[in-house]
Every structure is written in C-alpha cells, then in structure tokens.
View 1 (cartoon, rainbow, N blue to C red):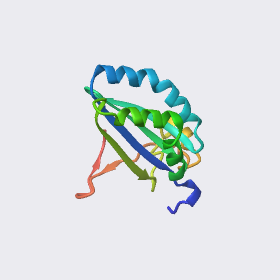
View 2 (cartoon, helix red, strand yellow):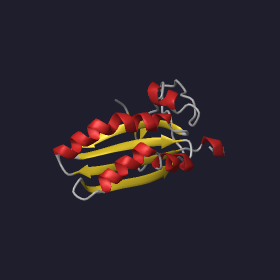
View 3 (tube, one colour):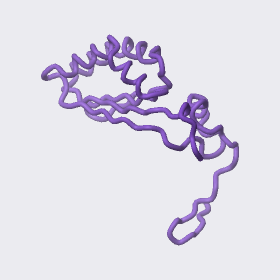
View 4 (cartoon, one colour):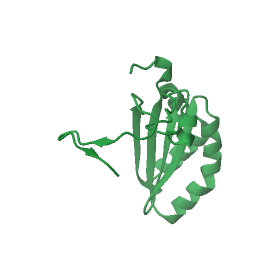
Length: 145
C-alpha cells in the first residue's frame, strides 16, 4: 500500500553505556528536564525509555520528520546531556540509529490501543478483525493454537 509523504515518520534509537552508579544518578536527576524538552519539541510523536543491565540507558523516539529530530538534538537540555556524556569517564560509548517508517501498524483487534492511538495520523486504523491463522511460508501449513 503506497503511503502519502506526510504520513512518513522517523524512529531514532539512542543510548549511552554509563560508567557506573554516579553517572546513572546524574542521568536520573536530569532526565525530567530532558523529557519536558523532548515531549514539547515540535514534531515529537512519542518515546520509550529503555535500560540494559548493568549501565546502559536508551531512548527510542518517534518524529514526524527527520528535521524535527535534528532540531531537538540542538535544544539546550539535549545539548547538556550530549556534552556531559561526551566528557571523559562518564560513559563508555554511545549509540544512535535512524529508521524511516515504510509500512506497519495494527495487526489485529485494536492494534494495541495505546500505539494505534499515538500513531493514528501515521498508520492505518485498526481493523478490529481477529488474528489470521499462522501459515508456514515454506510448506504452506496452517497452525492452530
């Protein structure tokens, strides 16, 4: 199904491997200000914070366009985090990946209501239909639960 240009959106996945508990405490203390700036940024759609043991913290963000994500990257609180993280000894490494939405969205039922609602302007509406049978792509077998 072809998509309209205005329905394209972008996912950015960023993370830092922190150097230890003091870095984790700094990050937790300053996260509320960064979150306020993030959710108030023009073009922001949604975000998810994630953690991987022992010291990696990441933020997956969705944006209406790539330019919006870059504008956020140059806002004061994000620059504060970036400057702090790039300072020697505070992190062991950083990660950033960009993805452009091509297709996807609700699979069945309500499509996970919170996501279907959040991305309603960007993905097809949930069908409300029951799940389809799983078909083995190689042998064509159908699986039942």
